[in-house]
Amino acid sequence: MLTDPVADYLTRVRNAVMARHRIVEIPASGLKKEITRILFEKGYILSYKFDDEATAQGVIKIALKYHPRTKVPAIKKIDRVSKPGLRKYTGATNLPRVLNGMGISILSTSKGLMTEKEAKSLNIGGEVLCFVY
Image (cartoon, rainbow, N blue to C red; front, side):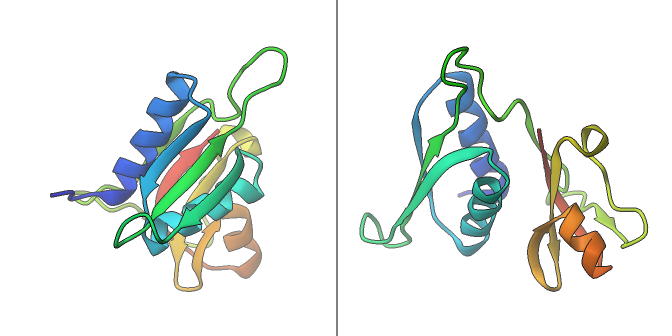
């Protein structure tokens, strides 16, 4: 039984990047699909595909992104911030900046999942799920 599916998602991506895999498969959920969409929009992954026929809940196939010559991964670090035992919430006035704006933090807000920059423009806060850089 999985108690924290977001941490499992981030760990699978982190392990695949460390092992230099090209594709990683992750069990799907609505929250994981939104995190994948944000990572794709911000350029941290090459592409993704939602395969709903593979299992009952579906699978997310993520193609990881590496530099063509140096093979350096686009995701240097991906960390879980808010955990089931200790949730981290932030208001609209003090949204976290990752690497002085070079990375992103993904927030769960009342308007859905978004980065801290999008939340700042909408002037809303929420639960800080993870940092990516």
